[in-house]
Image 1: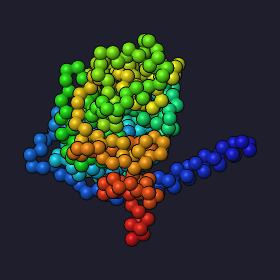
Image 2: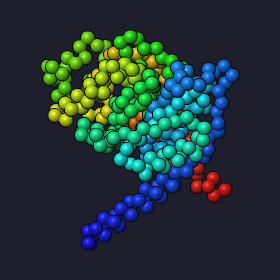
Image 3: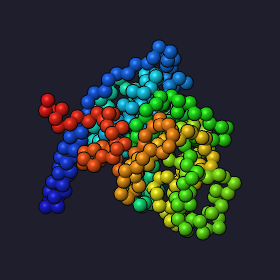
Image 4: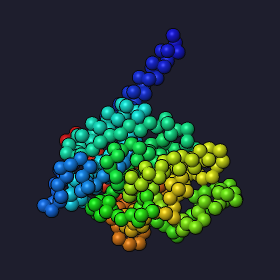
Length: 339
């Protein structure tokens, strides 16, 4: 009886903690954004004129997600033609309710759909990485977009939650893909590609030939244009899972969900200008120190790495570039709530 009472008290405590945390995150309503006069109509479901944006969504990164959504709409010439697809953890029904309510309140006119992701089903594939945040099952939901979204959705722009756009997403969505490419993303061939895999991988005669005949370069999976039709036809979800299964048997990488993507796609992706992923603004995975922009024009700012702009702003430890994220922050402060 005592143990049952203890469990009951723990459950109530957790529920109150969760409720207080989510209720503390109250967001302002975003303005409605309208199509320009030359935007095509989208009377049909899955119209070819729609831009499909896919994101994962959870309470922890909700503030970042809201800012990302606002930035997409604000800089779009045809915002009413954008369809958002949000993937949430199926095991967290209460948080999904909060997420749905938040988006409906902050973006009353947003065209969006929710998809429950069975995070328990992927948990068995996940190996521990260098940072615990990278081990969240929802980080691996990008592997399953082709299975989760309706078959009529043929192409998506996948976005992480820690970024903002300062350009029209339709330009990114229009990225052409060659006949043998499944996805497109900015590549960074100056990065040390060998760093992403362990000595065990490179010393294995068979595994080390994985990239033979491919000009394999690092790319960041937080911004991708994905052809879901080709993904489904090539069963690429299964190909990624096979590498994850091997990782469980022998340690071949350290960086969470990124290396399996590199193993399957590096050297075979469509090109995207670097302006569409000014990544690494969150610093490295250990200290999250401030970083400067890469040289060149900017269409998307991405705070990948440990440091997130909302956390640094709240802690009064903002990096200079965090000021570029702040205008998209819809969180209601204590002072605005009291006004």
